[in-house]
Structure formats: structure tokens, C-alpha cells
Image (cartoon, rainbow, N blue to C red; front, side, top):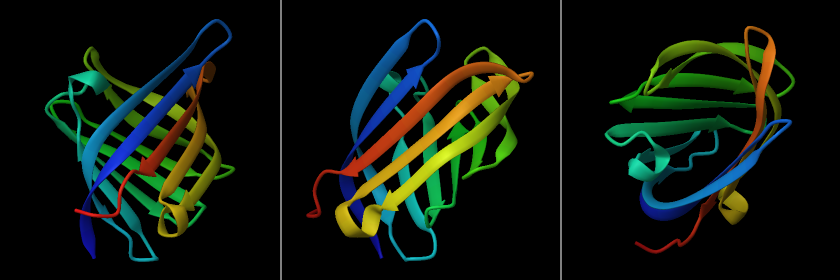
Amino acid sequence: MKKNELISITSIQWDEKDRSETELLTRAEISLDGNIDTIVYEDTEATGFEGSVTTIEVKGNDEASVMRTGSASSFMSLEVGNRRYCQYGTPFGSMQIGIYTHAIENTLNENGRLYLKYTLDVNASHLSDNEIIIKIQDTNN
């Protein structure tokens, strides 16, 4: 069953020098079916990807994918304990990055929360550590 819900997305990124945290409140289409949970939302100027749509699919606590389509495109595949290579689109062009996934905690069905923790690298050089926390803010339309 699909629902239109208000969600908060907190994105935390840090490296040896800096740490940044952003939070976005937006409406999303959420589908929780037990096998693959899906969150779809429109990006805004606040995310830096205005004109794009982001789709997050999660399989339990082991695998997730983050796909962005539209004015910017990217696809990240996350699997706990594994490093994957993915194409990542930026306003300046596309690049190949490595993603090592530390944790996926999918409790969307229980308490409306998804947590992703991963490390990004470019050419095997550490780029940043990242966390994404998505919380469903309400359960009424």
C-alpha cells in the first residue's frame, strides 16, 4: 500500500577537516510491503538537485539503493559489509565512486525510521563518511 507522508531527511557528512549536517522536510510516497520498502520524493533547491526525483529501495537491513533521476542522475547500491562502485551525478558531471556500507537499519514498519551509514571514496582515496536518517513524521494523509 502506498501512502503520501511527510518525512524528514537528515544528511550528515564528515571528513578529517569538516562536518556538515542538513535536514529537509518533504512529502514522499512510501510503500512498505515487507520485502522491499520504497521511499520516493522530489528533490528541491535545498538538496542541490532541484528537478530530480530520488527513489530509495530497502531490502531488510542488508541492502539498499538510492537512485536519482531527472536533472541530475545517480545510482548508489549499498550492501552491508561490502564495497560497491557506483556512478554519481553532480552538477559538474558524473564520476565513479566507491561505497562501503557500514550499516542499514530499516525500522520503517515499526517506528518509521531508516538509517544508512556508508563511506565514499574516489580512486580508493577516502572522500567522506556519511549518514542518512529518514523519519516518517506523520501517519495521516
